[in-house]
Length: 87
Image (tube, rainbow, N blue to C red):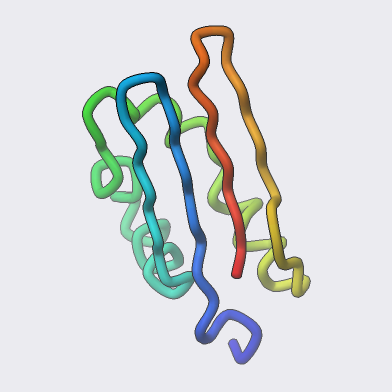
């Protein structure tokens, strides 16, 4: 749809020993969800569990409603932080 065209999902994962930035076009997320391969596509050195905790279908629902900005912020006891943005 017109709302999702040009939008990006940005995921930032920061731990004490590394920083990971993922920028995904929303249409790619839609495609990966349809094929059921989003978890496989986003496996990152032990960060797979962090990524799996994100409900991408709900994220897409928020995109379709026109939501922008930071939508998820998670901080764990071990100092890892995850932020998810729609831009």
